[in-house]
Image 1 (cartoon, rainbow, N blue to C red):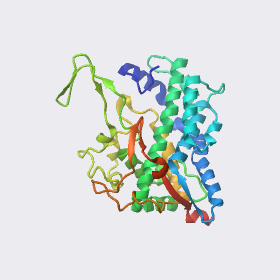
Image 2 (cartoon, rainbow, N blue to C red):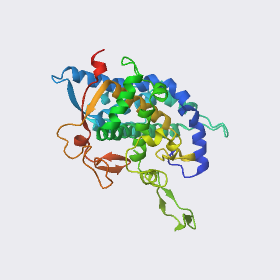
Image 3 (cartoon, rainbow, N blue to C red):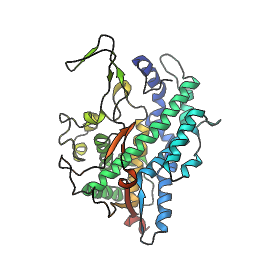
Amino acid sequence: MRTIHSFVDNKDASVRHRQLRPYLKLTHLAKMEYTITQQGILWTKEKWDKLLTKSPTDEIEVNYLDDFVIAAFAITSMLVYGRRLKELDNPNTDAAWKLLSRLGKEGKMESKPADLLQSFIEAEDPVTKSKMSSNEIHSECILMMQAGVDLPSHTLTWLVHFLLLYPQYHRRAGAEVRSQVDPDHIITYNKCREKLPFVEACLLEALRIAPAVGVMIPRVSPKGGVMIKGQLISENMLIIINYAIANHHSKHWDRPYEFDLTRYLDNSNARNNILSFSHGKRTCPGRHMAVWQMLSTIANILKDYDLRLPKDFKHLRPDIHNEHGTPKLMESHFFAVIKPTNPKHDCRMIISKAHNAKNK
């Protein structure tokens, strides 16, 4: 069954976009903020704080990719299936992926729909007045489960990785949050957009350098072939756009391989050149929900915790550079999303309570 990301015909893609667009706008997502916050950052904080209270050194080591994946699963399962799945409390993230596979095969949904599911049921194209069939709704729910977990969790992982390798930006982002927000408050998405431009720039730059989705879904060249930039592509050939290459193009980005946040602070239009969510009819419909989740998560983490690299990190440090003269990044590979190759080792950090949180 085709989904919004796999339609070949632009007309079909346009219909689905018109059906879903009203329900994935910021105004509608505001109704879901409680669920996003409760299952996301509050769950993460509860887990980390419990571990910290038991630590004799007042600091602990966490695997941030594992925790981001579980939180994203919790958020998306609540929004799509209307319940938190007990399997998500298993610290082994493999259990979560097996659960997703089972849900996809069984097609189980709660009798009382969650917000996103209800939105999909009610979705109607204002032009054709068509609604989605039950199979189409199910396919979009499964897509939302997959994309709603992969993109936020891996983008947040790369963002934390960058902050640990660029301590000057890490310090500035933390200082911005702690100077603008009461330590007792949970930072909302609107507060992030209003008060935290530097933290938002951190997220934008992570999306640019390390887009979680590495390539666009392939398209097939038409009968007779097609000319692209003066090159003839024969018919029936797969055409794939590499997001990372587009985001690193020197025509649009000065020092494209450097994690540089000033490019957004000095130019409000720079974000328009980031292709990570695609553009036009193929724009990711869930981009607002992903950014909402990621921005509020990283802001609250920076408010409440101090982060540092483990002492045994000898291969990934701010002073170890790659061929571009920038801090060397952890190895990664592409499988649906750009994933760390050695997450159990490379996605570790040491956390402790932030000074302002200790003195509450």
